Image 1 (cartoon, one colour):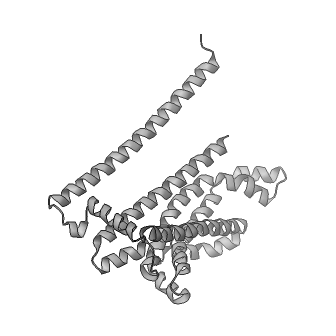
Image 2 (cartoon, rainbow, N blue to C red):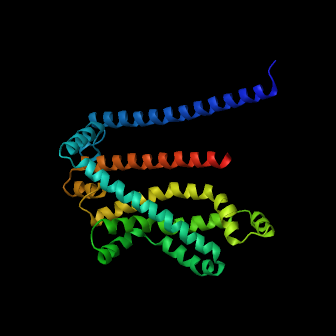
Image 3 (cartoon, helix red, strand yellow):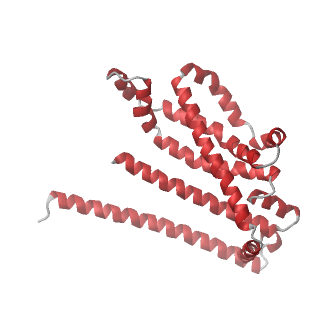
Length: 271
């Protein structure tokens, strides 16, 4: 006869196996869908259904990657874009967390600044990029600022909204037990806002990448954004398609990294 503890352990093991099987199935379906897309793309180019000069093909992309590796420029462009994106993303997170904390502490300040944040968030960031070039010149600083501008104001609004949505009864309980506003923030508001902050972070990494590419379009001589502009100007569209695919791979890598971090943090919070 199995004891109640053994039965519960068996159920947990079955749940874990089913959970892992589900994730493996999802990953397999994603890979299958991607392979089908590549095959259809290659066949369409070979059969003349699409013009390979304009739409390229997987084989042409591979040849372009090999060529860029031979002249040692591929990893330089990727590295520059990765560096600028990571710096932009980290600065967005730090500034958003700091500003949102200040807004939570000061209700009057939040009431004054909230409409300005909404207005700044609604501005088309591509229109600001030429101003950044005039103010800061061309170079890495301008590109990083462009990356920050795309994600910053929306991130502040999301973080602050998450802080305000925390259960007010828990905050009242902290005050009842003799705690102050700092205790309420560190023990209730900040832990309670972790899910919203993580979901916002997933969005921010993509927005930071978009902002960096916008900056590289206008103010760079290196990076994948520059490679896209250069390839379109000289009609080397294989470089354009290759750069876009590399950006998709980078975005997917960032997404998986944030997802793993999110899973780890949620597990730690449940412990």
